[in-house]
Length: 365
Image 1 (tube, one colour):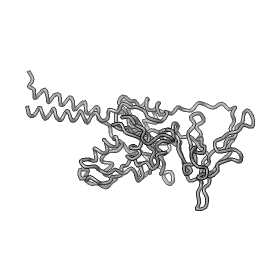
Image 2: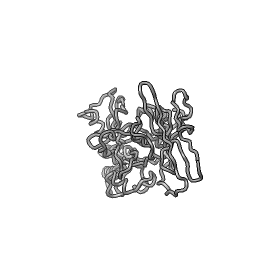
Image 3: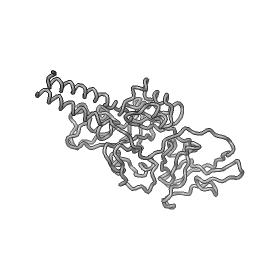
Image 4: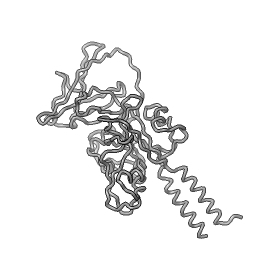
């Protein structure tokens, strides 16, 4: 009959093996080779909190400048209060500024995180920021030679993964997605309206079976085309389906149409007209359409905005659309908002803890 010590050690080995299977694959830098003005953009991240929280807390953690921006990224009404609950394991989209450098993309300037007593870089990377970064990346971004020497009160820049590159010649919004247990490359591709081959190529995945829970993927979200002028301050504005964005000093709300894949913009409701200049195409207001014939429609579309020390102008174009031309259906995109996910990326920590304690008991016996 086997000794108790041997049985306990054998159990420890089994548990440790299981922990390796459950362990998250870790964050990965996103390729970002865009240059010039295209080397900066807006990216998205799907944050999945370990415990129940609120929109206000998510905004504070990622230091989102505008609460309206957080609402827009998730397709939530502007009347949504900051106290709105976010269930544990729900996904909240966070929009942030991205910059390309040395072939990779990382969040610009923010978020910063103040180290609490007893915290480690690894705990901050995994526990606070859900594994979207590694402790090595945090250390490199903050010129920390010894990750074990972080101190309480120290402020750290968190380099969130992102990219500004076009994908297959098309403008996209790069979305950092945390892989849930049981996911597949084909399922993720279908969920976000992209091709599996594109998803695998972008993330350097050769074998779909190698996908792991906790792995961070660069998912390209198709963006709507627009009529925004290159002279506009918000040129290069990209909006994926299922979300909207406020621009022109919050005077204009733009969303992506899943039927035409054109950016649809109109004056933001609830803002004082005195704070926003008129946005019209003659007698036609921004976002409105009129039909002169059964097969032709004219629409006043958003073309950007300009500002000087003396004026603030919203640019518009009057476009003509044929209503009689048949058009193919666009690829589907997921609706935004909160998506419950079965995130088990934290389970391996508990398993490793059990392993350690079992081994300790075994040696004592």
